[in-house]
Image 1 (cartoon, rainbow, N blue to C red):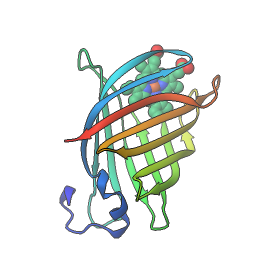
Image 2 (cartoon, rainbow, N blue to C red):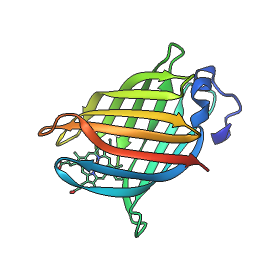
Image 3 (cartoon, rainbow, N blue to C red):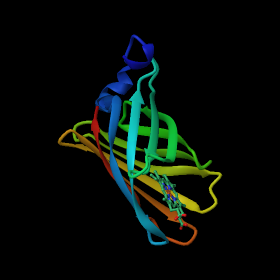
Image 4 (cartoon, helix red, strand yellow):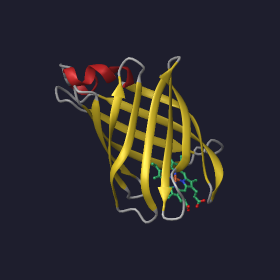
Length: 159
Ligand code: HEM
């Protein structure tokens, strides 16, 4: 499998559909900011025989290609259908997300358990769904001033 490991850990099997590189576009907004669009690439690899998927994301401005937000981390699915995800963002914010996956419907739902080094963000939820071979997600957040509301949504195709 990708990353040079010879063995796919059985815990990764239900999420193996994620492995690879995805590219697409998204749009963002929030009550306190102007809305925007972005290009995005996601990369999921299985580094070897451990129950972990390595995740990295980068985004860019559609008109200029100039880099925007980036993040990376590790997804750790468990055989019981729960999952934990750790993410470090280019803004310095770190997240521990916990949630569940539905292997049959190819949906992963995450909710922040820990957010660190954030000046405004209080809560983050992320939902990923595979529909018609497109991976789409919605990220919602709550800040010190605003209840949990959508910040990002995007749709990506596997390369
Ligand atoms: C603004 C958090 C991902 C682009 C913000 C703000 C916060 C935030 C707290 C300020 C909101 C306010 O002032 O009330 C987050 C979190 C993210 C995330 C927690 C991931 C979970 C992204 C991504 C992009 C992005 C992926 C770009 C592709 C922006 C832009 C603004 C913004 C353009 C407006 C900046 C401005 O007007 O000064 N984000 N963000 N964010 N975010 Fe994000």
